[in-house]
Each structure stands twice: as structure tokens, then as C-alpha cells.
Amino acid sequence: MSEKKTITTSNGCPVNHYEDTQTAGPRGPVLLQDYFLQEKLAQFNRERIPERVVHAKGTGAYGKFTVTHDITQYSRANIFSEIGKETKLFARFSTVGGEMGSADTERDPRGFALKFYSEGGNWDLVGNNTPVFFIKDPKKFPDFIHTQKRHPKTNCKDATMVWDYWSLNPESLHQVLILMSDRGTPDGYRFMNGYGSHTFSLVNANNERVYVKFHYKTQQGNKTLTEAEATVLKGTDPDYAQRDLVTAIENGDFPKYTLKIQVMTPEEAKTFQWNPFDLTKIWPHKDFPLMEVGEIELNEIPDNYFQDVEQSAFSPSNLVDGIGFSPDKMLQGRIFAYPDAQRYRIGANYNALPVNKCPYSTNSYHRDGAMRFDGNGGSSPNHYPNSFDGKVEDEKSQGLPYLLDSNEVGYFDRNFNDDDHYSQPKGLFEEVMNAQQQQNTIHNIVGAMSGIDGPKKKEIINRQLCHWFRVSPALGKGIAEGLGVKVDEFIK
Ligand code: HEM
Image: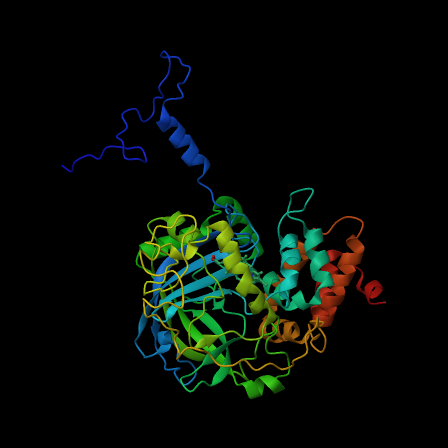
């Protein structure tokens, strides 16, 4: 029989009354000197850290990435160095707008964040299950997200503010159309694709740059829920997607995704029909075909959710030599937003936590700060340059000088010469969706827009209907009819 362990206080002192508080007499009152009561209550009061300001509800798994195709002509990143190379990774899936306890089947984009523990450093690809986004300038993000959260007065989700914002920002149309299709309610996390969404760059050993988009395609096949199915699941099993992922992995049914890239040369970027760095646009696959790179497998649920999933910190700023940024304004904004959020949410030394730490050597002169528990650099120098430790800058990974299109500094209108918000959604609705998918999308939009209320109701509905008509007359007509708006009157 194994020896029983004694319960202790956090300073290691054995506890002999775990549940009965020390009192004056059997019926109380309680004595202040029962420190263990204080410790338990105080520790409990501090169990929560701020939830993520977006993507609060999520689930995570460890896994591995295996290279299946050679892309060393595009990137010298260590992770892609040879076919067969395996790299450990951590993935976190999430919904965006809801709080930590919200339902998994809400209509919402899904986060699909990956942290590759590569020998060249941790590389994070912090993507979604959609290839585009609602806005194209990071200054717009807080306002946009406010509309996805709760109303300042009622504290309820509010269709009026959502559609007011979207109707005033037609750059959101492409993403809104995807969100309103059944792809807005994927059947858990195993049956959906992921996308790095932004344009990144790859740099090869000859210091040559290409632009790239990352796609991670589910090998389980795409499955979506209808609005009705998703609504039932919100009530009957709010943790549906989390349970599905945990159960599959615990049963040895490991989800897999194929990592693919689209590549665009800097010359092609100059003549591309749209701004190649505009996050509201895709690159057509016929012009920029998908190339296979490798396989992602998720095979281990962390033993402790809080330690690894809640404290995980992904950031688009975590790039490695051979993979670079692009001029995409949204990507540039995210470089600041994530580490800042994580210093607030987890603390200054968040990158020293096991799930975030690079398993290979990290050598910096950062020191001290709250909760320093990793040796803090020991007795080694904390200044650079110094005459003692012999550390040097890495000459190989100085990166390629960045070529700018313009040297004019200013506040440029994000839509100047970039205001085609309609062609790509049109192609999606008219050419990609089949009749059933079109029908479901119209049904979902009518349901969502039916919640618009108040004195501006007509104005907001009309403004958004205009956008839908410009995408496709059939789409606009279907929605107008569903909302009871007389099309003839409207078109006049
Ligand atoms: C300027 C635009 C954006 C800003 C300012 C922004 C900001 C943030 C912040 C502050 C967090 C919480 C980070 C944390 O506490 O750990 C977050 C999480 C996240 N964001 Fe964004 N975001 C932006 C756009 C995007 C885009 C375009 C995507 C996808 C392509 C995306 C995907 C995610 C994901 C997946 C997470 C959750 C990561 C995790 O699982 O921990 N975000 N975002």
C-alpha cells in the first residue's frame, strides 16, 4: 500500500484540521490565529487572472509538426530545414467575443493559435478559422470588439450596435459573409481549417524574400452546424467543442491538419489586383496555388488546464529567422497588442512559464520582475556589452532590409484606391456556395439582423441591405424579403 501523504500549509507545515476552523467553544466565534483558514480563503480569492480581452473561452493541446515537403527555396527557418523534421507545438482554439464561460457553439470566428517550439526560437502563428478579418487598420480594433461584447447600459449582447458598426464599415463584408454562413458555427475544432490570415514574408538562405499566406487544412474534413443545431448545443452542452477535442485526443484519435502556403513574389505584389497586405482580401488559389509543407498533429491534452492553456501566451511578434513580417497594418498593430496584453494578464515574466518558454537556450539580459523563478540569469552579467560572458549578436539572422513602397509619412485613408469591398464576397456567395449554403446564409443573416431595434433600426437595416445588394442582388433580395422590407420600395 502506498504511503499516504499529509496535507500541508503552503509553508509545508502539516495540517491536522483541514475542515474544522479553530473556535472559542464548539459553536464559535472563529479565532484569527487559525492561519490556515486565512490562507485557504486568501488563496481562493486570488484564483482568477484577467481573462483574455478577446478569445477568452478556449481549449488547448500539445502536438507535433512534421515537414513533408521541402520549402527551403523560400525559407531558411530551422523548422523547415529538412523533410521528416519534427517540432513540438502547442495549439489553442477559442471563440472570440464571449467570456470564459460562454458557449462553444456561438456564431463567432474561431481562434486557431499555434506555438512551434523550434530550435530557432518559438514561432507563433496566431490565426483564425477564416482567411480574412473584419477591419484593415489596427486603430479600429477596440471599437470593433466593443460591438461584439456587451452593451454599455444593458450589459447584453446587442445586434443593433453590431450591425450599426458593420453597416458603417463595408470593409467587414467579406468576413461577415463567412461568419453568417454555416462556417460561422463549425462542428467543434477538429472539423475546421485554420489560416494565418495575414501576409507574412519568408526569407531564404540567399536573403531573398517572398510573401506568404499560411493555411492549415483539416484532415478530418470540414463539418459545420446549422443555426438550429448550434442553438440547441448552446444550452445542452456549452463546452461542446472543448469536450469533443479532449475526448478525441484522450481516445487516441489525434486530429491532423495539413500546413500549406501560398507564395507571392515582391514583383507580383506590385501588380496584384488588390492590396496584397489588406487583411480583408484573400489571394485567389488559381493565381497563387496552395503548396503543401507539413502536417500538424494534436496528441496530448495538458494535465493542468490553467497552467498550460490559461497561461499560454501567443503573439504574432514571436517570429524566427526565415519568417518575417509584411507591411500589413493589422499585423503590425498586433506586434504590440499581444505582449502588452500578456504582461498585464500574466505578468512581466510570462515568457518564462513552461508553456511559453523556448525549450532551447534563451540568452538575454532581462532580469528581475514579479515571480522570477527560473534562476534569473544567476551570477552572469546583466549588462551588454560586457567583458565577461562572450555573448555576441547573431550575424546570420540580421534579416533582410525592408523595402518600402513610399517614404511619405502620414495618416493615409485605408480605403483610398482600396475600396473594393464587394468583388470577393460576391465570388464567395455566387461561385463558391451551393444553393443550400446560400439559403442557410440568408436564413442566418435574417435571424441576426432581426435583432436590430430602436430609433435607428430602419437606417441601419437599409444601410446594411445596400451592402448586401452590392455583393449580390440575390443575396440582398433574400435578406430583404426575410426581414419584411419591400424590395421595390427599397430599390427606389
Ligand atoms: C489589430 C488587430 C488585433 C488586435 C489588436 C488583437 C488583439 C488581441 C489580444 C489583446 C488578444 C489577447 C492576447 C492574450 O491575452 O494572450 C488576442 C487574442 C487572439 N487573437 Fe487577436 N487581435 C487582432 C487581430 C487578430 C486577427 C486578425 C487574428 C487572426 C488572424 C487574431 C487571432 C487571435 C487569436 C487566435 C487569439 C487567442 C490566442 C490564444 O489562444 O491565446 N487576432 N488578440
